[in-house]
Length: 112
Image (cartoon, rainbow, N blue to C red; front, side, top):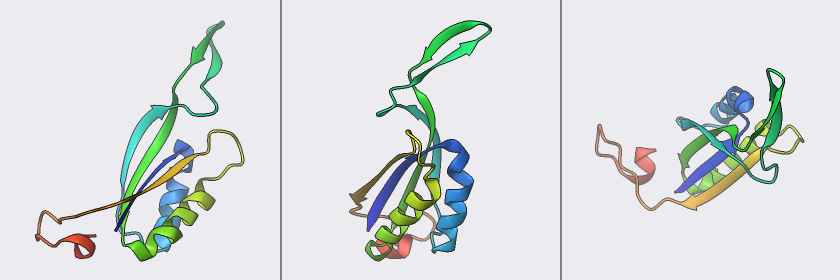
């Protein structure tokens, strides 16, 4: 099993969710987060005053999938979240050791 974590631009979230549903993803967790990478934030003008925005809003998606679906999910997120502009985000893939469905007690692939 793999745990896929993606940080994307918030306005791309619904497009990514629809694309993932189409390839068979049955669930995900989404968190509103702030961060920065290469872009290192930006400056904005508010009521005539310029100020630095060091942390940029992102949507963090976490998805647990069987090994065989991981590359498809990564490619789907990459294609759906892409804007060709700096700050499109990152995708991380981690090995997932164990999963348990709380309601039924199913484990690992059956719990996904």
